[in-house]
Length: 92
Image (cartoon, rainbow, N blue to C red; front, side, top):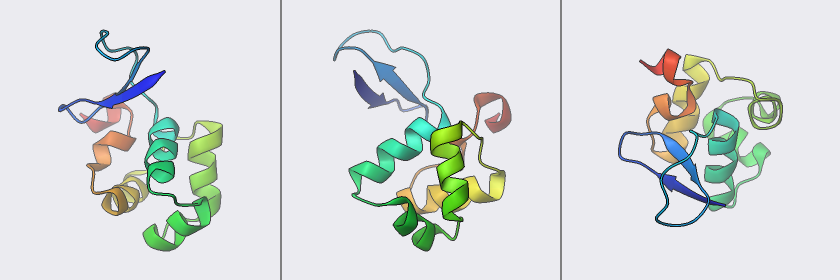
């Protein structure tokens, strides 16, 4: 399964390159993808962002939605928009 970032600021799942986009990724999936691309542990991301490691773990593993402040802190580390880590209903 491939992943692709769309210009709208939403990460989508793809099964094969060139296919129509699938469902939007949730915050945990996006966070894991970005963190692993940069070779960061949850503890390192916590140090860089100021977001507690337990909160990062909850987002990644338990499907929790980050609050606006934590989404902004995490987004700053990855140089993305905070909206990329929020459900589309909240981001609008």
